[in-house]
Length: 327
Ligand code: AMP
Ligand code: TRP
Image 1 (tube, rainbow, N blue to C red):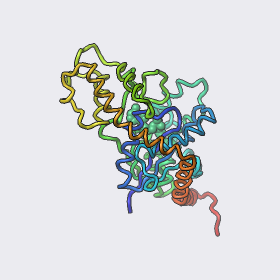
Image 2: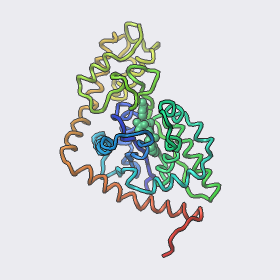
Image 3: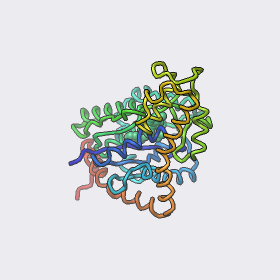
Image 4: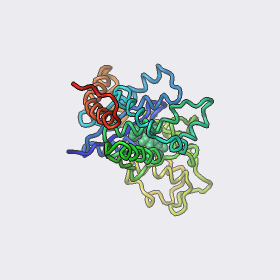
């Protein structure tokens, strides 16, 4: 039997190159080696306010981008988190075994909480729900970008604590980072990671950006005051651009760009990104032209994974002594 893979992306903001290189690209590459489940984590998105109409359309848009990026819905299950109630149900049970101190230590919580006028309790619970996403399917491998490493350690800690309190129930999930692109930085500020919530117009390359926009954003990307690429002494901006280009086109390496003036180097980076995104954008347009297609994929995904989640919930309820109907 193939080991199970699980990962997720929030349907908030615009999916960007960091999401693609850190997550989606690797999902597509490994999907056939595993039994893969890829989630659109709408319950995570609402840990900060989302406009309801926008969220509804983002969920389908994110699913279409999964497929456009190479996830094959026949091979992998594409699932909306809230369509399988086991995620939220298990999250509650895990909440009850998670010490508050563990959650207070999460760096992403601290960073996000700082930006909110009032912090919803859901924002603190966020990593418990993430642990539930993984454990409800007994997933073995979790391919993510580096920013999720701390959340995954917590997921293992929660699983272990549950197992020691109630008996062996969960298998330990492993973090799988991509070899290149685990942490793509913002184009406008190479010291902060590229993220959906940053507001700068030049911060991120969206997966659906037109070639002209991509060229402009990369041309304006922050570098340093050197005139040309010195592979032995690259500033963070130049290093980030090279990582992006290499992840998009492996033939772009240090030795290829050595000595290139920044103007020419940026053109090379932009073309590598544009050619990588072109087929994704084309596929996205094809998929979204068929109004019913995404909904059928999401129903199929849900139906495929429901029994797995139900089975885990039953095991957890039994382990904890909760009510399970006898029939
Ligand atoms: P999110 O945008 O927070 O829903 O992230 C979805 C996936 O993309 C997760 O696996 C993240 O680790 C990954 N990811 C997000 N931002 C980046 C980035 N700047 N570099 C690499 N991976 C990222
Ligand atoms: N928290 C992740 C992020 O924002 C998304 C996510 C939710 C996830 N549940 C998950 C990733 C389970 C891997 C496994 O990047």
